[in-house]
Image (cartoon, rainbow, N blue to C red; front, top):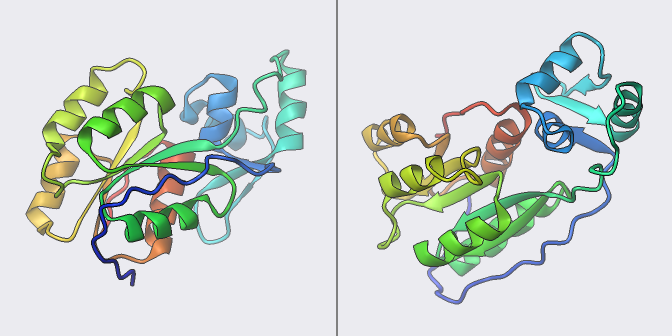
Length: 212
């Protein structure tokens, strides 16, 4: 489990991304400017070669196979260097966000940024257009319903996935968040692998996923 103490000093992790040789379906969708389900269809019909992660349904596409596919179908390959997928964490616990940022970004597929208030999160979301936003819904200036409404009415952020975290969520509140438009939730304290798996699933398949 992750133990964290309160510290109001914000953390700003670097957004550099390592070179990747394997992509998720979500990343391929971004490169090809199509929906993730279209990439899944290419994969399932054998047009785009790759493999599934053992023990899960997640698909992975080697970059060389994507290049082959794009050239065969006359797609421009200039978007291959799109960098890492952006993840925005909204939380004012610096120890927690530092640990989470390091864990999520360790694989090189994600560029993690941190905001410690609703205002800062709004500014950064507009700049980054993150694929996933992890937000502590118990922060004093966070209104979960307003976040969902803002994202869904913003053309640039409409596809962003929301993950709620909190140490105060009841089961009923968690289910309510899912109904309101969140894609998943995690109760603090949680294990690093839980949020890694949840983010991977949302980015790879575009599906909503319950947390725990």
